[in-house]
Length: 254
Image: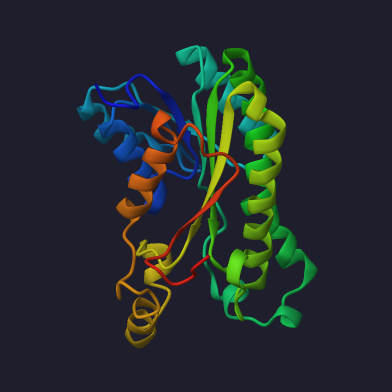
């Protein structure tokens, strides 16, 4: 039997890229996946594909920066399945030049707020909404998707680094406060992952330079993240809580 069989997993931002890959791998391993996107038709298209795995996926339109959307996501999921086992906080602000390629002092406060609202506060909203449901069943797994600049720092994309650093702090706090309810919270710090939103942002020369940063000399693939994510939430990792796992091909070494 697949280790995620009949588990209910919410994957935010799962209509494309890394989130889509996580949704696919979870479905392959037997989980009922809730696909979320601000675009409902995009989410429904993914659900149609996931249905071929014999699970019961559903699509819910969700903007994680809106309280009502997050409340509806959790309530609709609970009403449909009766429980929520897993939350993957993957949704975040897209990589855009306005914030990634600008210096710290050239980005106004509203720019910082915009990214923090999406990458950090959005995940906090989802955690606050799902934890009471997980406490009812005395079990649950939360995975926050962070980034290696939150560990090693970076000379670009300061709003992203700051927001992703907050996710690591959120992970530690939730692990310590809610571990007694058998709710585990862990974090993945991603390096250079070849999702179109990130990879296509760079020219060919920069793409190759970034590939060479990893000791394995390649970009990571979304499925690399999905496979690790699907393992962390199983009982094989039952004694791992509050940790940040670096997924970058051996660049940032702890």
